[in-house]
Length: 215
Length: 403
Picture 1: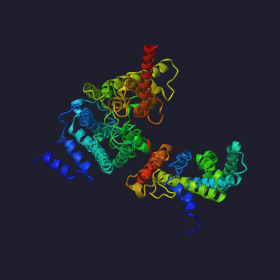
Picture 2 (picture 1 turned 135 degrees about the vertical axis):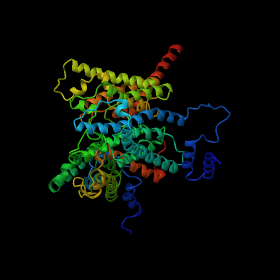
Picture 3 (picture 1 turned 90 degrees about the vertical axis):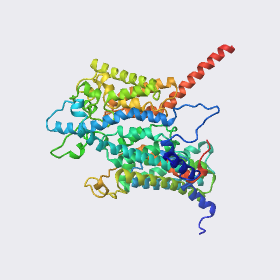
Picture 4 (picture 1 turned 30 degrees about the vertical axis):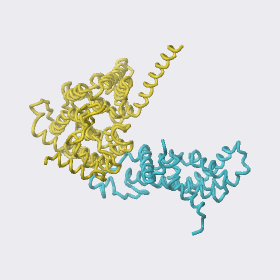
């Protein structure tokens, strides 16, 4: 498939694994800890960030030659803020319950280090198409970790996936609950999200020794 | 050919192979290795890791035996109490009986077996994967864990918690000797946050209470701390509390046996007397502060803190898990402070925070495990400042000399 050149493909695929924004660059941790108790919230958050980062990267890339470098941070913030408000309003209009669950964290996408990081590191120095790919790739890497963490936290913490009771009903004692299984309340607390992210980092680095830093 | 030689030849067969650490561990657990250092500039002392760990196990055995009898005793006492018969505890009359022992062993020994089985399995797996020797670190942890959980904790929960505690609390940091947190307390904290309904309340401390809840035979056993936290009075007198005829986690009830174990550990220089002493002082100071608050009338009987705040400071030391925590957990040489001055601060703050958390924690009236975990995290910081203070002092002295 020659849709993307090899270099461009790297822009999408690298952030998914060996240059993942959460597990390697350790950016965007706060929201990864805060909203991953449910898989649905994780997915929506991932999509929101993907939209903001993909579009934002293109916008910044198009403006890169006319932004005075002294006020570039302010310009970047205005762009992110505008995009975040769009996401917020769309969520409020079409998924009100979910937007209540995500609460301030949609608004806080604006402070997500991944976004400013990609603007600074990539969009300011590259063309719009490549910036778009880079934005989508990094947001996908972020979303991937969110979905993994959300999957385990919702499955083990609430016994559900996307709201479906996959392990049985804890109150009626069906499925696994009939033999004495109980939900792990620790999984619903933020510290456990940190531990899950830590385990992902651990697994990733023990599979790929090149990622281990010298210390 | 004796067992030792057999194990040794197995060890030789597996030398350099993947499973070698597992067989080496079996051998060194049972015997001194065939090759030991004989000459040269080595310190030849007998207090190796194995000896240290075994000494702590010996200090824990009386507590375990008491815990087994007490589990049975509390079970029958609670059933009696539900029918209106209040038992008068007597050591040989109704405590050391076969019925109590059988009931207690039936509930406590599975906890011990699961704790050791699962924990050692994780250790062996990690030793084989990472290619290092199995360390003795889990011997003590495995004994501590069943002693600090309620008797009726489901075994699978304990197994999950042990895997979590050993992997996250110890192995990710590099195994025995490298851990930041006390693994046994990590296991307890995991259970506490993951399955709170099995770790607190008035139904978990006595065997069978949870299963019988809602039936005509229902009975319960509230811990003393639980009663105080709800501003209730308790039926137990001083001797009951001190010698341990009270409901609680398996091993923490008998302050008397814990003191004996603690003296033994201090005498053998396994546990640091500095930590134990300063922790007791810290707990007493916090208790006195709360007593003072009550005496001043700042807290009335209507306050939800009244029950625990008005508890005399010396009583705080003999109820709940604080004695057990101070003697067996706070003195963990790996996760505690290393410098002598640091040990005083470390211990003092453990005692201080234990009582503070105990009084102010609305959900669960015990704080010693949280206090120790908190200070585990701060132990390197304490050591850092102790060392820096020493460096500064010496620098000053040096300047005086050169000036």
